[in-house]
Amino acid sequence: MSAASEIVFDHVGKIFERAGEPELEAIRDLSFSVKRGELVIILGKTGCGKSTTFNLLSGLLRPSSGSVRVQGHDPFAEFEWFRGKISIVFQNDRLMPWRTAIENVALGLELNKMPRTERLDLAESWLKRLGLDGHAKDYPHALSGGMRQRVSIARAFAVRPDILLCDEPFSALDEVTGNALRSELVELLRETQATSIFITHSIEEALRLGSRVLVFERPARIAYEASLDPSMNQATREGVRADILRVLAGELAA
Image 1: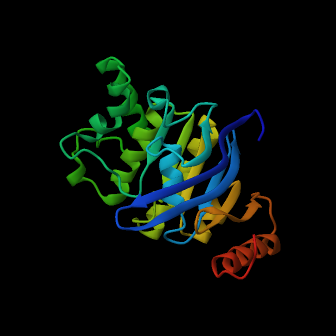
Image 2: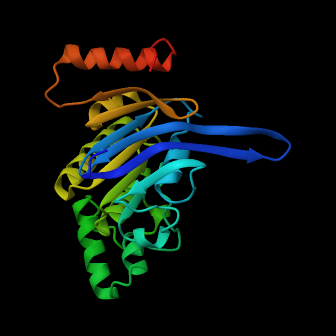
């Protein structure tokens, strides 16, 4: 757990109490860290605790045991401290339908009390950067799915976050649009040097995007971990793919 780590999970457990039913253990003794500027992929089957991990990171849940620290702070107990430091890109764009594209991008800047002219100028520059020049005054219903997700990404980056959390942001898009946005996201992360955690069900997406992949099993704990390097040869990459498939099939021990 290096001092340079932006995110640290230290023996984290999360149990949900359910009225009249047995407790649900979502996370068990989960420990990992993410270094500054790293893009870590969390991969696993539905119900393995990925979303619970995501909610602990974003300060929406408190762990039942262990600790979660982001930049040395507790995201649940110090929720307000993280304003402007963490951005989230969801599977669905979650745009406000009554706001134009530029107003949606400017939302975080508005919440951070940036003056109107300055925030709209910055929002417009991000729309141009994401290929949406000329669509600033369009409402979400007038935009395609890919365009709406570009607005969502522009909104996330406009506040210049230290940390970007991505919850399957391209799973609802067609393959061509999804591939284009994946490439753009990686470029933006490299340029801004934001630390990122990316949740996905897709092995191909994990191998394409990440610098490291963590494969979860249920309740959430790391069953397999691999570093990913763009210079990896095909045989090594196929070996990682095969290992991930065996883990997901329950054939490879942690």
